[in-house]
Amino acid sequence: MGMRVLGQIYEIMIRELLILRRNHIYRFCMVVFPILVIFFFTSMLDDGLPTSMPVGVVDLDNTSTTRSLERKLDGFQISHVVAHYPSVAEARKAMQRNEIYGFMYIPKGTTEKLLASRQPKISYYYTYTTLAAGSMLMKDMKTISTLGSAGLGQATMRARGLTERQIQTLLQPITIDLHQIANPWSSYNVYLTTLMVPGIIMLFIFLISSYSLGTELKFATSKRWLEMADNNITVALIGKFLPQTIIWLAIVFGYQLYVFYHLGFPHLGSPWMLVLLGLMQVLAAQGFGIFSFGLLPSLRMSMSISSLWAVLSISMAGGAFPVMAMDGPLQSLSWLFPLRHYYMLYQTCVFNGFPLIESWFHFAALFGFMLLPWMVVKKIKNAMLTYVYIP
Image (tube, rainbow, N blue to C red):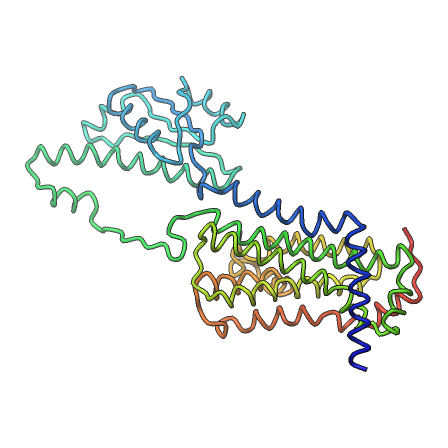
């Protein structure tokens, strides 16, 4: 009996491989597009941080002191002074036209007030339409304004005969010893690619899993598929999805080799943890895709559910906005997204190198997604035997 079941699985696998070969959708969605996504994100964020973002300057004082501040601003890696404007109104219009992300306004008399210790005001404006650009440029312009006052104060105190140590103590009473754990480069590639690429791969797995079941109804091949397994839906599903699982695992493991070993992304976890994480990612995503079809046995509706859940996963995973800062109902809802548990396992066990026991509940959740098809397996069998495809 066991050999007969293995033979049936083998025959269904051969049938599935022929379907994968004939249908170009599988080739593009399982191989071409995932590879393009991997290289797109890693090459787009290759520098780690955005550099040379355009800023403007409105310098109505135009002295050697203010020009020195402008040169220092232009010297930062992130900021690049591309234009000088005669007024705030002109700079504001340039920012509204997306020519610059921000500008610094230095009013007339700034240097004179600095020398007289009358606290001049330097203003800087930046757009938060693009959150990353706005926050980074704000940091640079704030640093420049602080450096300007500190530089003048340092010269004044040196003229009064204070030592360098006394000057340093007065200018910076508390020294900050900054340690950025795990990602000291503040690299967007390390932070963003490791969330977006697995999320998009899971999107393709969701869709292809639902699509491959839906097309059995669409092309009226479902009964023949079940006959090959003696109407055993479990054997039929294993034979159908095993070739897809192997292909998805090859894509996921190839992605891990590329980013963690070729590009050198930081990882403190063992290679076996990466293998386990990739296996759980693929099986949990396939489980959800099969479950979405079993929930609504319709090609169109199951693929709609899969795409909606995958897109929401990017927000609910906690990479862009922390889950712990969300409202209570949204925090509870985040448990229903496989990507959230994948991301937490990656952060805990791969990125920071903690043992698996520290995130056993996320591992258990992914295992639960793998078992979801068992809840709807009878409904899938009934759909394959009795449902008529409606476009």
